[in-house]
Image 1 (cartoon, helix red, strand yellow):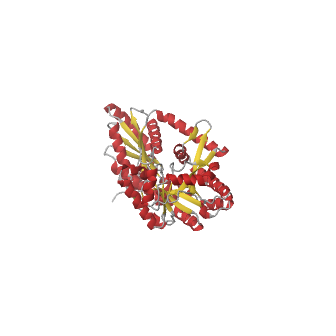
Image 2 (image 1 turned 90 degrees about the horizontal axis):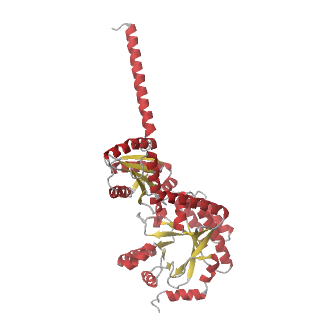
Image 3 (image 1 turned 180 degrees about the vertical axis):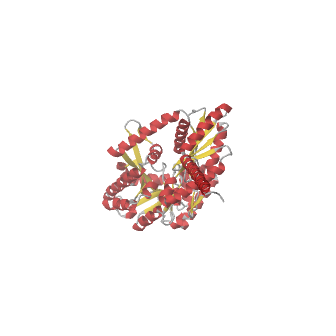
Length: 475
């Protein structure tokens, strides 16, 4: 038996060792949290910089390039807004795991925050090989994820910077890869872009356009043009689609394909959409007071549709202008409707507006990858066949079979079918034979300013349109 003083000292030493072990454990935890993302377990921004600070010099000594892939999920905010942040966090965990499985043994993935990830390839190879790896990552993420019982199919945009070609500094490489990612997003979802020096000039120009757009929203300068909706059976104009136009005082007309993506990234798309809704309904009221009994369609973004007071905004626009609900059509993209699961904000808002009498059309129909079950669960009144199918009619029978299938499906569900992008008479002939109800585009008329709309409904224009259309079987 140990003397009391020795036993006491031993206990004291054991306690010290325990405290030291606990301190070491806590230091390890603090170090992990300092350099790793709590949600996914991947290295965070600080951890990534530490990796690059080690990887780039090592690669330069070996004479091999390092690739920095900056990956950003498309449409992630929509999932957060629709199903909540818990669903968003679950998706990010699954995305991180899938990226990790797709990386090579020497590669390092990291999460910077939000829906942004970075993958470092320390033995990158040629630019073509890096492009293949990046595209493989994009394809990997296209397989739907199961999130709390809902299928969600994101796409990813990737920007790439290479060391030493584009720089050596870790922060600089991240910034340049981020610039390339912005360029990839501008090209459409699921794209890959490499940094080039002219991208910095393009970013400066993009920032200037954003600033000018903010000023235009504050002072005025936006207008609407109206594209006629023509009946294929009668050749008459039966409705209008409001299209946003911006004529810059220095640049001249700025295409929507340029300023709409900038507005989306800058958080301005909701403000733009609200302006279009108010302006189009006010103008429609003027036409109806002149005896032009028509309806107008406006495009609705995800930001608008998911805004808590969107239904109130729409009802107010109708009531303030004395319009019946059926005079307004909301066009929503197919990808947005895929997220309109029962109970979601999109589903609830569309159901409320449809019950009120507002019509809902699916824009760009046929371009989505998800189930068409949303046609049953959402209050859809018409589908608009994407113009790519109309353009594809010249390439063989496949596009014709696709359109015929869409028409059959839509009519079985009592939905009208509108064909977009009709520019030649033979296209109208085929579409009419396939059973399409309406058509739009240059064969009939270009989008015109509000003061020219009355002429679209005049008899001479109607006769001209009728001559442009193929004869009906009765003729």
